[in-house]
Structures are given as C-alpha cells and as structure tokens.
Length: 450
Ligand SMILES: Cc1cc2nc3c(=O)[nH]c(=O)nc-3n(C[C@H](O)[C@H](O)[C@H](O)COP(=O)(O)OP(=O)(O)OC[C@H]3O[C@@H](n4cnc5c(N)ncnc54)[C@H](O)[C@@H]3O)c2cc1C
Image 1 (tube, protein in one colour):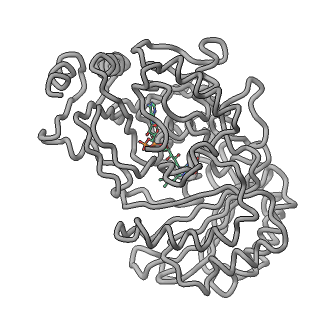
Image 2 (cartoon, rainbow, N blue to C red; image 1 turned 180 degrees about the vertical axis):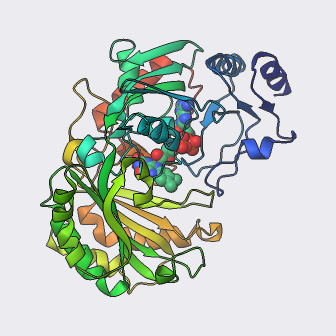
C-alpha cells in the first residue's frame, strides 16, 4: 500500500494522509462518531484533476475507493482502501436559476448563495448534510410535497467514472448515468460537481410547535386525520421526542416527552395560517412558533443537531394509514412507554413527490404516504442490541402499515436484511446494476450491504 500512498502524493495536489500521519484522524472523522473509519489512505481532493488522479491511481492498483463528504451517511465504519474526502471543494456559484455546486458543499452554503438572488434549493431537513450524497439518494425534505424529491431539481453532474474518465451526465449526455445518479446513490463514480435548479422562494409560512405529553394523543390523532385533507402546498411532520434533562435544551422541554409538529406552507401566509389552525387547536403549545419566515431559515424547522455525535437510526416508509394506526402507534411509541429512543418521527409524504421527472429517474419510495424514522439514544453501548430490540418492538405492531418500498437515504447501512433491494422497484434495481456495470465495470466504488 505504501507504493499507492507515494504515487498519490506525486499525482494529487491536495493532502494525502497515511494512518500514521498527523491529521489522518481529523481527515477521516465525520458527523457520526460511532463510525470509525480506517482506510489505508485518505486523500483530500481539491479539484477535478485531483479526483481523476486519485481514481486512476486506485483503479491501477485495484484498491477500492470510497467517498466521505460530511459523514452524515452510513454509520458503517470504512475499513481499508482509499478514502476520498471532498470538504476542500466547497465552492458554489449561482448563474440564473442554476447553482453550480462542488462536491464538498453542504446545503447551508447553497441556501445562503441562493438567498442572495431570492432563490432557494429544495433541500433536506438539515442544512449541514452534503448536497451530493443527499441528492444521489433522491432526498426527502421539508418542502418535498410541494416541490418533489430534491434530485428532481438536479440538472447535471460531472463524474469521474470507475475507469478514470471525466464525463458530464445530464438529460443530453450520458443520460443513463444521469438517470442513475438521481436516486441510485452509489457505485456510479466520484461526483465532482452538480448543477441544481433553484426555485423562486424567499419566504415560507412555517416553523415548529412543541406540545406537552398530555396533548400528544390529541395532536397526533388530529395531525394524522388532517394530513389526509391538506393540499400539496402543505408540508409537515411530527416527532415524539424523549429529551434528556440538559441545560442546552429549552427549560419547558428538559427531561420531558414532547410532541413537535413541523410545518412549511408555500403560498399566501393567511392561507398557511388558516390551514394550520386545526393543529393549533388540538393542544396547548409549550414552546415554538409558526409564522412567516425567510426560506433560508428552513433548517430551523427540524432543528437537527449540527455537531458530531454517535448516531443510530432506523427508518421505514408507510402506506396510507387508517383510523387504527394512531392508537397502535401511541401504544408502542407514546408517552406512557419508557423507550431508549430520542425521536420517533413521521413525515407526511406524497404530493409532488409521487410524480417522477418526465425523463425518469432512479428514485425509489415515491409511492409512500409517510416516512417513519426512529432515532436512538446516542450511546454506542446500546447500538448492538438494546436499540434494535426497542425498534423491533415499535415496528412489529405497525407491520400492517409498513410499505414494501424504501428510500435509500433512510436505509442506513443496509444492515436490515432485504432493505437494500427494497430501496428501488425491481426494474429500477436491475437497470441500476446495468448502469453500474457500464460506468464502474471493475467495481472500484463498493456499494451495497457489507
Ligand atoms: C441529521 C441528519 C438529517 C438528515 N436529513 C435528511 C433528510 O431530511 N432527507 C433525506 O433524504 N436524507 C436525510 N439525511 C440522510 C442524508 O441525506 C444521507 O445520509 C446522505 O448520504 C448524506 O450525505 P453526506 O455527503 O452528507 O454524507 P457522507 O456520509 O459524507 O456521504 C454519504 C455517501 O454519499 C455518497 N457521496 C457523497 N459525496 C459523494 C461524491 N462526491 N461522489 C460520489 N458519492 C458521494 C457516498 O456513497 C457516501 O458514502 C439526514 C441524515 C442526517 C444524519
């Protein structure tokens, strides 16, 4: 391997870290502290030329290559091979309605650049997540019912393929690769940049409210019924949070079980207020606020953690739910249960998400009505047994509502048997295999269950 390290030092302008080098640990660290990456070498690319050089060097030596942007992705530790880090490529430029986004950008950078022009990208809940990794998986965000899956707004990618060629993938060039990059996630090459269409959006009517344990049943039941009536301009989710008694948490929520409702309405604020009224009336909020807000504050709606922590989660998609769902859900995850789970979140899906782009894309899970994501207490001692057992206890009784579909961004490390295959319809799964074989014939970019 040292030969590969030496060669990389010759051909790459960015830093090359062997495990004994100072800076290696920081270079391979990501958002999820439970993942301990031990590649044979880490390479911080600074340009497309660096990307080509590292891919060709890895290909020549038959060494697998993986990509780390922010580390918000898989919790699985990367062992061996070349690890490419992209954080030094973080330039974003806005030209008309298109943002040109380099490989290492986070959504926060794109949101800020777009806002200067009264525009916004269709992002996920957290703006600390990397734009490329997120979009390659499709991307379900707080505006998806109105604007669709995030990758529907991707207009082109620059990619270094498994054979070291640089290609443009868009609707006209390498259209099969473009189809795969919008939802196919991995095994397709090293993306160096993405062109992403922005929408004209400077304000939203939205925010989040927190309700005490006594109101959870009423608000949750009302919310579930309400989601069956609202138009596509209404985006929302709920989460039962079991919060620790920490000073960092606002006083009314410290050590409490609470229900948060997140709301994002696109259109006339008065209409947004009117539509949200049934949820306000279903309980007494103890914290939070819903009102007109800059679209660039979108990440405040979910307020996901930004600092690295040990993270463990599991998610499924749900079909339409019926009147029995709320009762069963409260039985297994409601405030009366003692569970080692920080958050049990249901997002309302559907609307524009159900419609694929005219030219088609590899996004899976479009047909689902809701997502259900469960986040465990951030204690790695619980990750192997306690959390999986607790989550099985929640999901088991809900089995009748769980969709056979999945979306790859919520599939974690594919550690649950069958979840990898469930991320795409069978025909899409097979076609993705063909595209991967074309652009990465020697499987330089490992992807899939371990
Ligand atoms: C707090 C939090 C909130 C989230 N919210 C949402 C959400 O609202 N909606 C949603 O859909 N998902 C969400 N996710 C999931 C997230 O979108 C995925 O985990 C995504 O893969 C993260 O991408 P990343 O680049 O930030 O992470 P990384 O762990 O750095 O990368 C993940 C994977 O992306 C691929 N990748 C990244 N960059 C490149 C590149 N340049 N070329 C080729 N492949 C690349 C690689 O396969 C890599 O393993 C969330 C995750 C977290 C932890």
